[in-house]
Length: 304
Image (cartoon, rainbow, N blue to C red; front, side, top):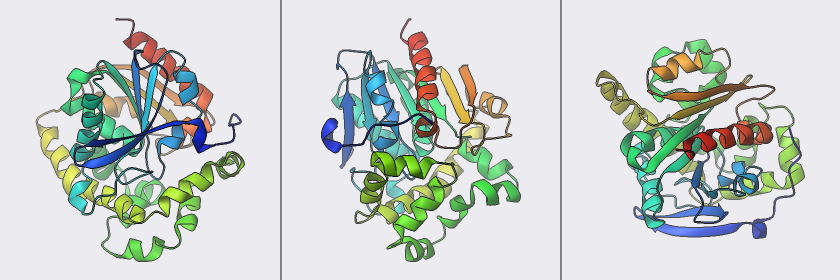
């Protein structure tokens, strides 16, 4: 893992936008006339997961890193129905329209990659291509993984959809819960504490409504998104824009036929790479490698 600079909020250009009935927080960098790259984080993080990549990408792109609804410094609306993939993709689309962006390279990690997939299905005309980092399709995970695989790598998908109990166990113990996830990757917590990212992640998770929002994100995936994907699966709904796939060799996708699985859901996989010496948090564990692949992907996308 490369060394990261000390995180400081004042070093970043923070912006807020009112879209789709909520407030979305995002960080921007680069010239707004350059080709746009839009970054979407996953659970349990925020825009900050991209902190090592933003300055490099901004050298020749207009970079925006969002906080998804329920995370970071974006709004935390109440209710499970506020967190399905279509709503969250609509938030992103609201910002895209507000900023008049076109021909976007959208890169998502974890939950953010699920929103990027949904965006590619709902608003393909806005995209040059989409990058999906360390995820398999939602419906594949629920329908094909064994109980053992789910227990080892996806246990929180089950735990977090249970009513009421997760709130009772997590609220007031956010630090313990977050640290458990990050410790899956060796040395990640050390790096977070060295560069100040840990304090920032913890700050946003301790904001009122944060635990509830994250839980509702998973509950909506199970109750709202999964039935829709299962239904649309019969209609062969597929991503049409070019796709980049990245995953860690010791992360959640290790040992899975990642490309073959995604070929059932996407028509044009133009880049696929298993990142060596890497767990689930690819942009933070291997930022230089991640940047190299994103740069190559966008170079191809924006050359046409």
